[in-house]
Length: 379
Image (cartoon, rainbow, N blue to C red; front, top):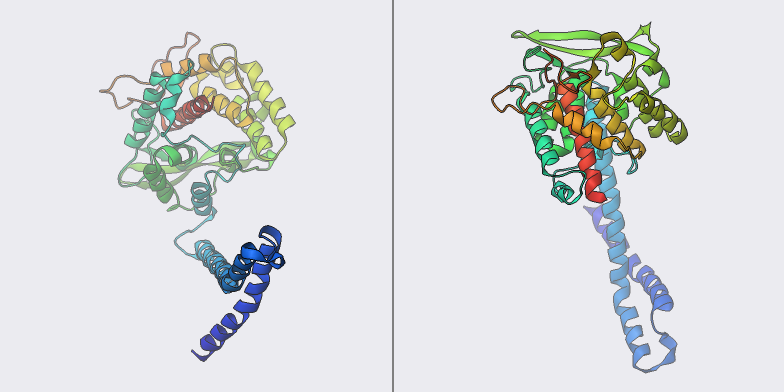
């Protein structure tokens, strides 16, 4: 108490002389000349004498509040880094990604924007009400795919209704929904951090992170985490023992292009993107998978649009690609697939028989569609 009293006396004692100096400088620079006499000079002198203590007190108070706020934030982040409630690096990544909107700057869009303002897109010839309706359907599909006990989104309603992937399905859904459906996104994040696993960092480029390029050369393998009441929770991890020729696969090239953009290597990013641009044949992306299986993958079209948005590339074929994605959305409201996007399609643009909708494809499709709607509102 004695220290507080002495400190208060020192604070008050210093406020007047320092306030005099601060106010004098302000009036000297901006105010009327004090030495000229007359009403203006007397008024300025009166203001000078009366205001000086308050100027200092106000400034000192602001400094003290800034220091206290900085200390509080520092302690808060220390707690986040050390609390046992957050067991691994994945939790910090998810929390920071949600707080900062993607850990990236304004030139690299982390994901879709909120629904507010999207209605303005109907004024643009290229997009309109059908696109907005499609986006809402995709969001509802993702929300309906969430298991109430696990908090995770299933892989697919028919071919894998009891399988839940942390990477890539739920991570992508989190990134897509954090602005569109924040409550669902936070529930997904909370569910993911319950498990200890090695994140598939290659996909962190979508959150604005720049990762080592050798990650694109590693093959992926499934890793089972747990089985609860017949529900299988697993994730995809990178396997250093498996090396692939990543430049044969459109998704890897697009990821590498966005990674280069995140690292400020814009020329390299554009060169990589242009490689995929040459793979587009007017119907879909023709890469190694298409040559082996003879069917197009929908998610690669969505990733192509997302990469174009991040790199700031205007695609002449954007409308054509968007129409293809929208044509693959399930329109039957009585179906468990309703609102979701089919995973594969033929050279005729029709869904491949037996293919399902799934979380990964729908999340990326929603991201791409929201990015287009966002750009339409700004045009």
